[in-house]
Length: 312
Image 1 (cartoon, rainbow, N blue to C red):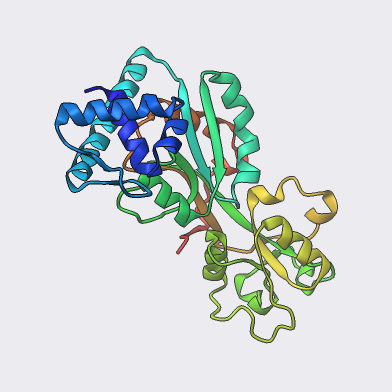
Image 2 (spheres, rainbow, N blue to C red; image 1 turned 90 degrees about the vertical axis):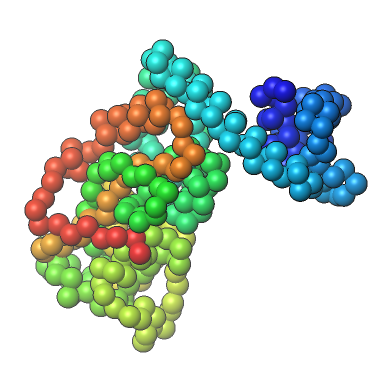
């Protein structure tokens, strides 16, 4: 019995197809099938019912697969321990990032990270918060950058920075006459928001404390990106709420449409999160260090007059 054989049966279980599993493991199907057969002979247990399509585990095979998953996780943790003890930072790392953070945070650190740690293969994917939590729990991604707190028992959070919100107003809006804006001055009937599922939408609704978004509006639209929101506000009447990093690289003309909150400045907490199956601690530590070193100085400062908004 070998770790390779355990890896093969787990691949067959995921794919429910021997040919697809062989492709995933970068071996020929006869090679994979032979190794699975050897393991079954060794255990004297039929792991897969090959008479069905797709193939499914037998009842006894299911128990073998559950134990194999634990063994492989332990083996991976042992490998990571070895790397850590040697001071080696290498291997694949899959990072999830929510869409309202990715375009603004990734450019701050990705290039420096890959240059500093050339042995790390960093793979980055955009997902919404709920999808990222699911992927972390399943061990399909190694870590993520999210707005927190998540209040999820199995998810660990390490604070990176607090990001204040700004108000972006349409040209000619009456509130542009003010240098700073009180939250009570905002009318959510004028708000342009992200669609359901984005944590920034929940934060905006929490900020404005209104029950209805579309009451009394001729046009109702929920955007999928902050860039769309910005263009909508510029071409119509109303406002949107933007995180700080989304505003710093705006053209000078657009910067004139930004206003700060008058008091109790709302902020969102940005953290590096990992799941119960995360084990690549050396890479994660390196990522956190590089991110923290490259965030704008303004975000490293703390203010007593801020209010952290949750994502729910």
